[in-house]
Length: 427
Image (tube, rainbow, N blue to C red; front, side, top):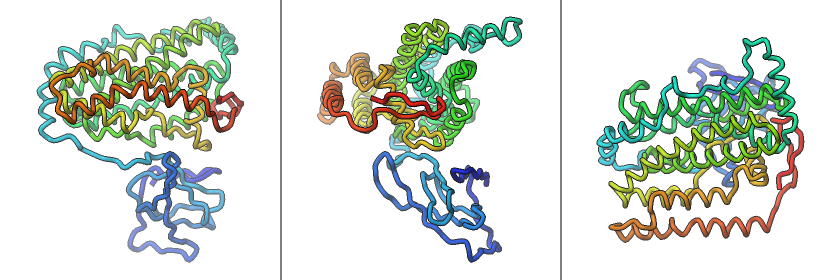
C-alpha cells in the first residue's frame, strides 16, 4: 500500500489487509467510514473499515472496494483521508450486447470518415513552437518578455486559464473513459481497429494542450505550480464517471458536447488574452481551440451516423444524457485543501464569460440543429416523447439561468491556492 502522511491528512493510493497473523494493538479501533457526498448532500455508509493507530497516526490496514471521500476525525487528530469521488450510482454495460455488432460493422466507415480528422505527427504543431527556445542565446530575454506580457493578465483570467489547463492535464482519465465503451474500446492497448487508433491518436493530439498551457503558466511565475501539480494528481486519481454506462451511444454524445465546450472555453480565453495585450497567449489558446473544434466535428459525425442507422436508440441516449446533465470532466477537482475549488472556478468562468450557463444551452441547441433532431421521422411513440423533451430543453435552461442570475447567493469573493491564495471576485 502506498501511503502519504501530510500535515493535513493521509492519502492512500492502494489497498491492503492485515495478514492472519497480524496483531492488533489495543490502541487501534475499528472505525466505520462514512461517505459524505458534497454534491448530493447525502449521508451513506460505505463497505469500508479502517484500522488506525491513533498514537502514531499510522494507517495499519484498509479494506475497501473503491476510493472514498472520507474524513476520519475521531481517532486521528489532524489526520484525514479524502479522495473526491462520484456521488451518483454507477451503472455499467447498459447497452444490449447485440448493439456491439453495430459498432463493429462501422469500423470501415470510421476508417474513411473519422480517422481522417486526425493530423499526422509531422504536420502537427508542438508546444515548443509557441515557447521560448531553451537552447538559444536569447532564451532568457524571451522568458523576460513572456513574463512582462503575463504581468498584465488579471487574476481572474489566470484562474480560468489554470482551471482549463488542469482539465486538459487530466487526459489519462478521458482516454480511460473512451476505453470503457463497449464495441469501440482498444482491447489490447495497441489494437489496429479504426476505433482504437482514433482513441490513441486523439489522445496524442490532446496531450499537447495541457503540456503547452502548463509550460506557459510555469514561465509566467504568477501561479503556484506545486499546488497546481497536486490538483492535477488528485484529479487524475479521482477518475471520472460521466454516466455513459459503457455505451458508445452515450459516450459519443458526451464527447460531442465536451469538445464543443472546450472549443468555446479556449476560444474565449484566446479572445481575452488578446484584449489584455498577450498576443502569443491568444495564439496558444486559439490553436488549442481549433484542435477542439476539429475533434468536435469527428464526434458529432459519429452521432450523426447513429441517428441515421438507429434513430430511436440514439434519441433515447441523448434524452438520457440530458436528464442526467452533462458533467464537466474536472468536476472532482481538489487542491488538497479546498473541496469547493471547482465550484469557485466555475463561478469565475461564468462571471468572466469564459464558459457560462448560456454556453451550455447554446451547445445543446447547436447539437440539436447539427443532428436535425427536430426533423427526425419514423420514431416510436417513446422516441417522439424523447424528441420533444430534448428540443424543449435549450429554452428551459435559459429561463432557469435567468431566474438563477437574479437570485445570487454565496460569497462574492474567494481565494485560490493556484494564485498564492489571492482573492478574486466570484459573482
